[in-house]
Length: 311
Image (tube, rainbow, N blue to C red):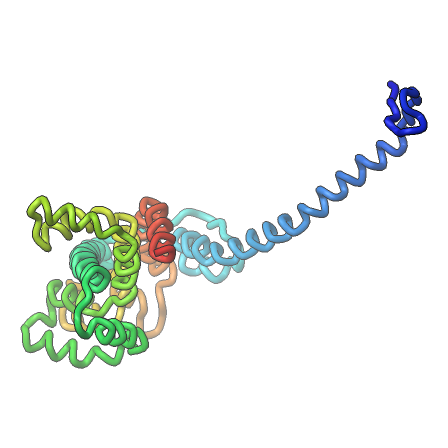
């Protein structure tokens, strides 16, 4: 291999190339590998920390499932051992039949589905009006809605119960649905508001030209476009309703047959003892529908949060 020097004094002269030693090439390769390894250190450290956090977060759920398959004495006698000595499927039978969790599951599904339907329609319409229309007092309404975020839920239980008693809806599924869906649900309204603000005005103008009124424009054009937000609000509302305890407890105090899953957990707490394995089995039954729903809606949930924040 030769090189041609282009300098003024040595123009046209051909000079031999300087050979690269094998040791220098090996040292250069080692340096590049060392640099790549150093760049990977932060990634490896972050991965290790995240794996540790996931293990800490998942362990209680794994322990719950393990306890649901153990003998009541073995639950705390086995220490950190998660593998049962023998699978006790009778715990699930005791929770489903004896503790009436089959009935409680049906009650919870009814309350959650109707509550989600009311909250989605009401919050979507409120967010649409606040986002697309300019009217006197709009900022005052928004300020009041945001202020309700700082009001503890327990402070409103007395007027809610008093109103339900006057309407003869205290010990009923309908009363629970109205009480759970009648709150402000400010976060859901703000999610819809942020999303609808980012949509072009031409969509409504085209619908008006086609002869659509307010309701048809909302239900046929705007609401279908807010699919990711609707999935997000559905999931958040479903989780809140499914895990609600205080309101269902008050509304079913004299009607144990109308209890929801969270209230039904009290059946395993006795005066002198607690059936921990039965409670763990009941908690596992309660958790499965929520996990399945989140798996189905997680993509839309992330899209809805990202879309609302971007808007």
